[in-house]
Image 1 (cartoon, rainbow, N blue to C red):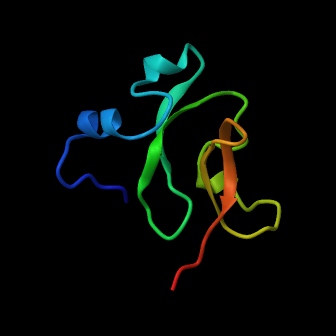
Image 2: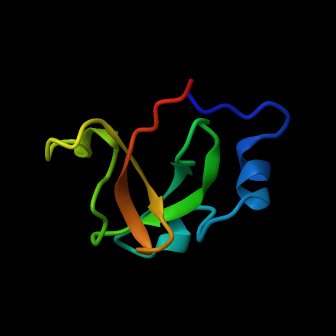
Length: 90
């Protein structure tokens, strides 16, 4: 679960990276979602638009190809949402 300890959601969205703050920023066929950071934390990396060109919508779309569990997050290199391997941390 992602939580915000000292700030409400509107404040959080204005203070972290991303390409949207509200669904309206994403056009008629998109919507704004928090992307988890890929690594050992469950922090929000930023808010990014989901679009029809995304490789995944949520985590259940990841790992279906036999690569193991994954997380759906915004991939800045691909400029859309894609599955990343789930990182096991000690």
